[in-house]
Image: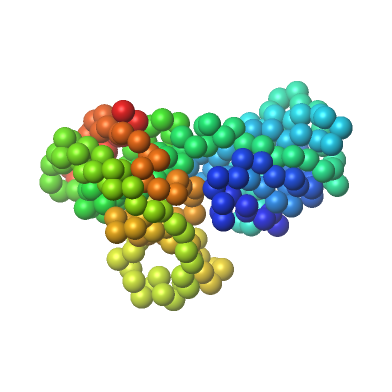
Length: 234
Ligand SMILES: [Zn+2]
């Protein structure tokens, strides 16, 4: 298994780690700062640097064969690593920080648009959510609400609850398409103080003010009830 350092501290840019498995397309470490693709958030890119200075470019982090492991996908034509090698794992922080800001913005968007979420995607500098909405959405009003949430500079923090507690509070689940991972007995809740509370395993900023000014680029109709809201940084 891999210790998910990014889960307790999303601001970690690098860590020391040991290679515990080498697979045809990637490397598994005993601990990592690389977030693996999932929950609508792209996996991190970055480097693994061995003690002798060899630098291995990582094209993407993905979930490994088991849910508690991360596979670091090695880019083409890189030096090879072996089980037992000590490495420094470093993510492309500028990209990750933009993803954290955008991911947190999508939490604000679920508060600004009071309809169930049917899908979504965090991208670098852009994001979108699909809503099951039977009414027209007001682009300017949503943009104003988002920027007001950002300006409130509210803390963002994760905490854990039991699966039983989540089952007793179904209103916490806003996303119809993605069920929170179950089976471990506990679920990670992401709390944007006074604005949004829902299960989420992604990486977020600590304070809504870090998101900065945002805009709603467009609202598209994808079917009779499906409204897609596309947002970016202003
Ligand atoms: Zn989240």
